[in-house]
Image (cartoon, rainbow, N blue to C red; front, side, top):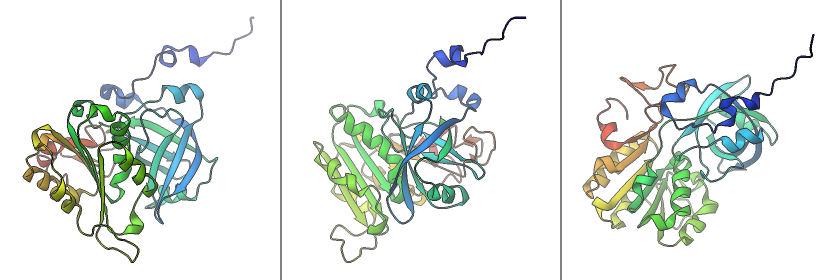
Length: 301
């Protein structure tokens, strides 16, 4: 009897061909988990940390791709998994960046993790911001609080492809200065040609010398052609109503406003039914929606 040779799974057709993780029809069959290592941890605030996650297998790492606005499920063995927006550039193949707030059992376990710890990654899942459609137009990138984390990938895309867009405005607001995320990047974004970045806080401290108020007030000084402008808005759902109403008053159509709507996601593939709004699943039909669609989803925000 001959010796049974070890089978090389890398010769499977699914391994040879690049995976199209952005094929929404095939999402529900993507149950594989990528083993990843935490290679860096950056403390952003008392509540948020930025993690660099490096997929361990070289081939899987090179095949992995995502689009701005999509998310991954991060699994911590023994604790569970959570959906987290991808905060890095789509052009970065070395590692993923995810900003995680310490807000529950799984995220607390992640906040205790050190460099070298292993986690699982599923995905990416969900819809994305149609940035290619926005090329040739002005873009408003608006975030409130933790919303700068999912907005960071679109910011990378726009700034790395600056010649493809007209006016670019980054508007960011938080409750207080100690909640500002990625403050080490603000100056580099401002230095990019014709990128206007403004920051506002609601409750200043003694060291804050910038604008004070609500993020909608930053829109008062923005001048754009409303029919040639797109807007991306990320933040708490209550913020959408006021920001998108103000954008509509400026003349920007609702179908040119895009929001990221994360609602009680659990599995990322539309199987657990925890994120549904009527017949809509925010994990597969979203999390990115145009605001016109959101307005027609009862109890979406």
